[in-house]
Amino acid sequence: MLMGELSNRSGVPIATITYYLREDLLFPGVGTAATCAHYDESHIRRLGLIGALLAIGDFPLAAIRRILAAVDDETVPPYQMLGTVQLALGPGISGPADDPDWIAARDEVTALLRRQGWRVLARSPARDLLISALVALRRFQVPPTAPGLDDYAQALAGLAAAEVAGLAAPASAGHEERSAAAEAAVAGMVLYERVIIALRRLAQEDAAARRFGAAGS
Amino acid sequence: MLMGELSNRSGVPIATITYYLREDLLFPGVGTAATCAHYDESHIRRLGLIGALLAIGDFPLAAIRRILAAVDDETVPPYQMLGTVQLALGPGISGPADDPDWIAARDEVTALLRRQGWRVLARSPARDLLISALVALRRFQVPPTAPGLDDYAQALAGLAAAEVAGLAAPASAGHEERSAAAEAAVAGMVLYERVIIALRRLAQEDAAARRFGAAGS
View 1 (cartoon, helix red, strand yellow):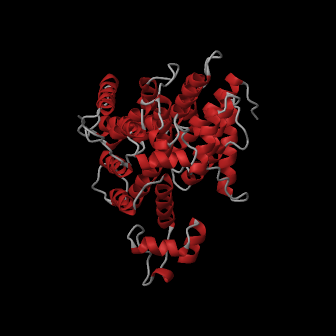
View 2 (cartoon, rainbow over the protein chains, first blue to last red; view 1 turned 30 degrees about the vertical axis):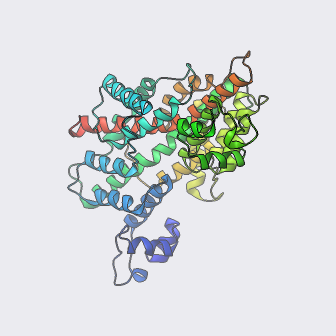
View 3 (cartoon, rainbow over the protein chains, first blue to last red; view 1 turned 90 degrees about the vertical axis):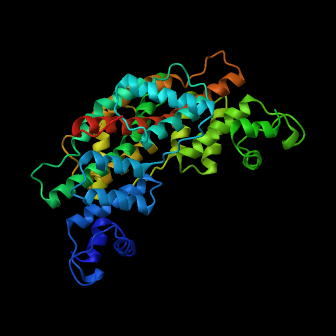
C-alpha cells in the first residue's frame, strides 16, 4: 500500500508517519521516496506499537527508539527485551538515601521480595517505582481493611508466568514472525497495564455498589 | 507549625504551598496572613494527597479541586466519592460509533461485565478506558498464552471488596476523622494503581528470570 492508505488504515496522519520515518522509529517502505514507497502490514503493526507506547505516557522518543531496537534485534533474548522495556518505562527515582520514609519503604520492598521469593535486580526501575509509591502512602493512614502488599503480589504473580510465556517466539521463527511476536509481547505488556487499571476501577465500582448500594446498570 | 516548617515537613516548596492556598486546594491555616498562620497535620496530609494526585499524571487542577471537594463534603456518601475520583481520573474517550474495532471492543467489555456480574454504570470512564486499551490490543496478535480478561477481572475483584471497605468512615466519626479517612481512601485508591503496576513489572521480571534464566539478585 502507499503512504495514503497506510495513513488511513493506521489512523496516523501522514505528517506523523513521515516524522517517524525521519526519526528512524518506522522502517522505510520499499521504493525510492517515502510518499511513493510501498508499505505493508508490518508498518501498520509498528505504527500501532508506537501509538500504544506514546499513549502510556511519559515516553520520550529516545526511550521508544530503544524499545523498538530491542524488538528488532534478533540477538536480544526475551528477558533482556523485557528489561529494556522496563528500563524505558522508568522512572527509577531512588529518593534521598537518609530519609526515614525512604529507608523504611526500601526495607519494606526488600522484605516483600524475600517473602515472595522473587528474583529481581537491585537496579530494577519497577522496584524504585514501588518504593516511591509506598513513600507517598506512608503519609496517609491507609485503612486496615485494605489488602496487604503480599495479597497484590500473589494475585499478580499468578498472572505473570502466562504473560511472560508469550515473550518467547518459536525457535523456528523467521525474522518477520519473530518481530511480530516481539511487538505483540511489548504491546501486551504495556497495554495490559491500562487494562488492569481499568478493570480494577470497574471492580471497585461494582464492590462499592454492592456495599453502599449505589444504582448500577 | 508555621509555613516554613510545613514546607520542610511536607517537602513542598513555600511558593507551591501559597499557590495551593490561592487556588483553594489547601485550606488556610489559623492566623491573619498565610506566612504567619499556624498549620497542622491536616495540612501535611492534604499536601501529600495533592502531591499523590499530581504524581499520577494527567490531572488538571480543576479535577483535583473536584476530588478534594468530594473528600471535604460530609454529605457525599462513599460510593459517590469513588465515582467523583473515577470521573476525574477519566479519560472517557468513547471512540467513533461506527468503527468495527471500537464496536467489537465495546461488545467484548459488555460481555465481560455480564459474565462477571459486575454492576457498572454505562457512562463509567473506566469502561471507556478498558475499551480504548482493547482497541489498541486488537491491532496486535497477542500471544494465546496470555491470561484472559476474566483471569485479570477475577484477580482484581478479589481485592476490590477489601479496598472499597476502607472507604467507609465509622458512623460516629467527627469531621476531622471523617476527612482523614476520606483522604486515606482516595490516596489509597490512586497510589495503589502505581503499587499494582510496579508489582506486576517485578512479578514479570521474576517470571522471566525463572523461564529464560536471566541472572537475578
